Image 1 (cartoon, protein in one colour):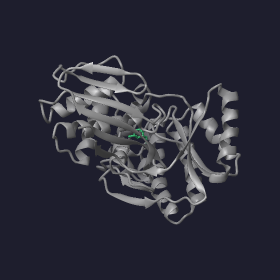
Image 2 (image 1 turned 45 degrees about the vertical axis):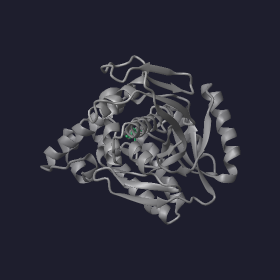
Image 3 (image 1 turned 30 degrees about the vertical axis):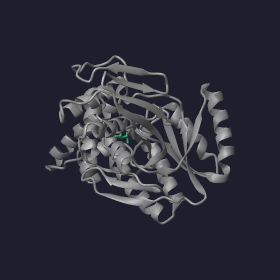
Image 4 (image 1 turned 90 degrees about the vertical axis):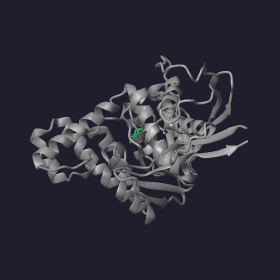
Length: 368
Ligand code: GLA
């Protein structure tokens, strides 16, 4: 028997860098995914991708960090599963993907969640979604070195077609928001600046936020658990005790968190131009206060401001490369993409990739 797991990428409409601060995010799953085909293989374990990479090992081999980045996702998942069941079966896994990697659409979480799902079924380990999210986060933190939040995994596991999830990352309460943008589409523009977030300042931001929270709590004699819970007055009270960067990060998180909640309300009221304005504000905050953008992302967002058919745009995901997410008029997409591609190429000498994104379903499993 072959177990086929389809694990989607994620699009985040708004609410960036708020997940690890216990705030709100508004993501949906992307209608592009990684397909993983698992079967038991008695001799050895083998993982092969359609990009031509492959690895083989014995499941009983002791854990060893690999010098090849993607292999550590596989080894990390196996180590985490071994903590639950020590005698795992050798397996083969063929991976076929329509998800571009390093584009900020969470191909790595799609891979990790897909591996956990498939291998747990193959080994009769019963895992609910929250357990998969925890394991997946452990893999990123402990084997990849990225101190990420839970937005991507939560979305990959729980997304529904044509819906976004307003997720409170503090208590994991959710509200599904219908996504029907009428004459508008979600357009992703991929800078083709590939990033591996563990080599960026992502972890520095996580630490700056932790430190800011500690200081704000001390100054205000409070015990807030997350930076998203502090008020703007509490941030201002602590201004003299925070570094300039910590102050900027805290102000961004405060604003972005409110933008995420407000955006869900606006989308529910079909006020897409209001939502578009918040997307632009989000980008400004990510660029100036949170400092996770890059010149290519800024260029793309700036370009769209001159185009009537674009309602809103911002960088998406961890930053430092990857995609922008844009809300654009459907019947102008072709012209917009052609023009922006041309300008991008002549400025940076890099090809731009465009993806029309539809909110898709979460992870699924088929036995073949
Ligand atoms: C990456 C992380 C997420 C989240 C975003 C930024 O995608 O994996 O947990 O922090 O960056 O919003």
